[in-house]
Picture (tube, rainbow, N blue to C red):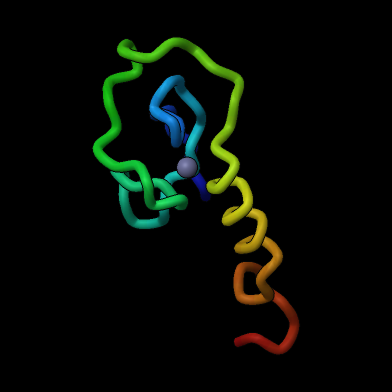
Length: 72
Ligand SMILES: [Zn+2]
């Protein structure tokens, strides 16, 4: 349900995988990245955006994210 998209890292010196925010294709969870450039303009990377991963982890831990008992 969460899409990854390659984009510039925070320092702007390389590429990282960001997690796309829900309901948009141009913003990452970390909020510091928008308007994704074409993949061809980026070197392939195995790195992931730290802030995006932290935010994703928090969301997955949140009870509302899954069908927890007691939530209708
Ligand atoms: Zn990010």
